[in-house]
Image (cartoon, rainbow, N blue to C red):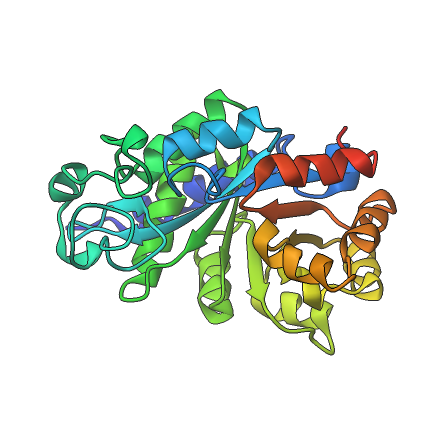
Length: 292
């Protein structure tokens, strides 16, 4: 017979462990971290196969202090790092990750389609990425891409954060704000970030409604007044910068969003700058004098 008292004690112990780890040193707020974070979007994905350990390692070498990864589940509910629901675009395999076992995923090549030089690169598990982040003192922005079993994905990730002692350096993000709200309710102490591609009339209220600690905003939706309101309320932000070829469209027309961006970084309005071109993002932060 199941002992409900024992289950309650285990749940309470798990909750305290997560809260204790979340109170440790790593902070996604620039004023607490002493620097603006550079986030390699799927690692240094401009020149390395996205969402792979080589891309993460290259991002760090290029100056990143955090990496953004995407998570889905295998058929046997193992959290792996993959942006798409299928393996078709980034590997030599095909089909939905949710229909493939971890053993089958392990046999795929996640580098050869990007460039033959990366042949043999594997899709990493979340556990492997967390171990890497802890050993290399990196933060992780972990997006739940799983759509069929999102709550299970969150629960599996939360368990891995506790097991690897990485709750302090991970923030879980999603476009699904309702799912984030459920995640925080089930795992107190879990830090979350709501992704939005819109400028909300009440950005702080939106974050409070889903229990998030931070917001991810596209550069074209960023406004200094919103950043000030976020910081006054204790929330952090992450601004995503387009790839260089997208920015080049502005430059060819005599427009340049970068001077304003650098000034916003210098003024302490931005906590994390994210992008595919990690050295370029690092250069912007250094130009603003906020590299720490």
